[in-house]
Length: 154
Length: 436
Image 1 (tube, rainbow over the protein chains, first blue to last red):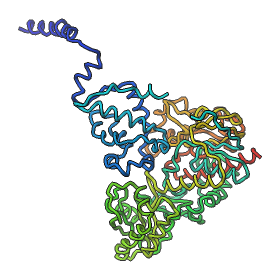
Image 2 (image 1 turned 120 degrees about the vertical axis):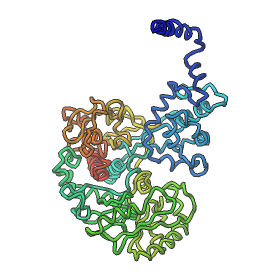
Image 3 (image 1 turned 60 degrees about the vertical axis):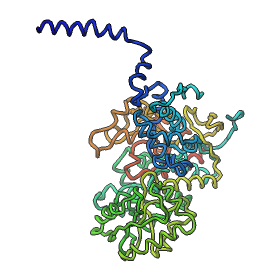
Image 4 (image 1 turned 180 degrees about the vertical axis):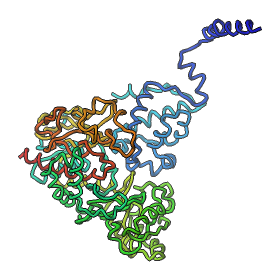
């Protein structure tokens, strides 16, 4: 009995499971990740996303950018949250990023905030990248083949 | 994209437009030199409390701030004697001797914004209900000097403005009542407009149009009358533009002196200070360049900043510390503009070449001990020239001013803007002398 159970477990671990994995493998790692997790709102972190995240990390939440943001007074979505809060709170949390989508998409990209940032965060680029991510990560929405922001800029 | 970058030839190039850079530029301009100031964005000055702390009194009890009456210059001298790594000590006795002159120069340059200096420091309330010393403060804060308030002080917040808790401030200031401070009461008034999400700078702008400040002043009459108040302390949002005279208009409508507290970030008084420095630079005829000065060569050589080529015999590096970007943390600590060695700190770490160590190893567990990371920066000689690791000046015509000079924790030790004013003033005067 004990021997039979152990033999069965060994067969599962050594032969059956690896074989099953080998035969079931389809697509690249990213495709399988997306198939498994995208419905839960989790998008994979690409190299470009990581670069943007590192640049956004320089934010010290001083709020100086808001004094140069015309939309911060006008658009209710940005008003409630503030753009710098949007990328601080949600930039590293893909599952909650869609909550900030309204604020991110309302940004007109005027770059008025960027000249005010003491630590030099490229706010427009961060907001643009997060907006694309928020758009891509929203369940059920058509995902655009996200262009790498690093490649676009010289 | 500019096809042909303009060439700007001046005597002095200042990198950084915070308090230190602006003071350096104005002091050099005042002494007859032609000056250009390069900056990327507002820095730590725009995030400051809005008042100028020069030095805490190192011999006074921290629990008795109302007894800290030693004049700012004398307090700075005592601080320098106790802390050999502090910039006040680095500039030498002769340099520190000119602190009074530097402060009077700063007060004169920012005359419409700052209240005239007193012999003693002013004791001003913070939004956390503490009293701190200020050598210079804005006119909007003057009436809140705890030693000058006649009669009870009413701390009044605005309903829905979450950045300011009047009850907290009043409870904090009430600790000083038995030690010579005023009686304190607290209240809350509705704003003359309805916007619960208003940011401090929006509140400040909303108080500027005719009628808004007056309506607020009249609303303040009721709680002030109930307390029999002699002065009213409000959140630091009393107008962005000092020309709108918001505090004066509220005071006239309320019938008693009105002041604002110091600010934490986001800081309306800090924005006011930044705007006043920018305006003063414009009036003084200082050329402005917007852009980053990363990887710059040495003074005397041409450097391209934001599409403009600038050539100057003397450079003053006033790029700030971690907020302004004068010192950056990229694994280790670096000085990005010229690649100078980062080596200054305080206490046991003084003089160690900090750039060779990972930044994470520069903090110590004891929260009240000096943190080497926070006082990291350049080491300078008495003439404010940055020195290399053997103690020799890196370049004879390269000077440093403000928080980029290490040896003090400029954000917390109460001497930040005082160091900026002194070192900026000395560097500007020295640069003009060499340029002549």
